Length: 206
Image (cartoon, rainbow, N blue to C red; front, side, top):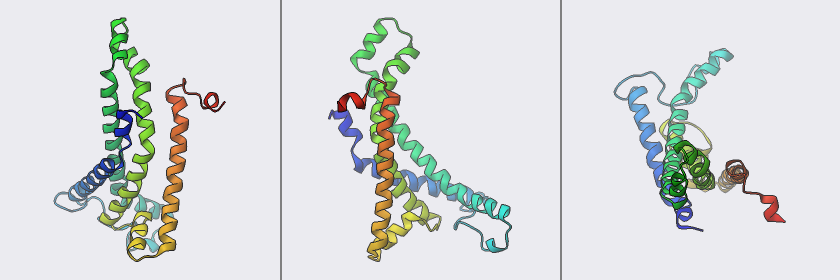
């Protein structure tokens, strides 16, 4: 494994960045839009309103969506920020390599250099790092989001089961997250052939 690939697989910095990003974005959204210091547009906590039993099903769906706007926005923005930084670093590293200088010296236009040469090699590192980034953002992000917005979800359930030593629930949560990680990893392996058609798993297996 090369030095760049090793850096892409480091889980600790990615986990720390996910924690800081999710927490800061969630608190910022609370301060801005949940009555913290500016506007009170969205509810601060909970999944549904207190009178949700009296609502019709269209109003219940709208109420549920109203409560989930801030948590979902925080998770999407934090995940997007992590993947954007990873993609930027991969592209900057590939742009400085010798084959890019050779392609430019041949007279290729910049669009052809970026999308025909740099894109494939840079996205391989992004695809390889995506499963670890996805699981870290999903588990850590969901736990922090659920704590900040007082939501009853899988992240908070797993954390509370670990604190209370409820091993069946804890292992069930870990099993679910591990299964999600394996599925995402399988999708990532299949995406290799989409990003770079030169990769052929059947030829390697033979």
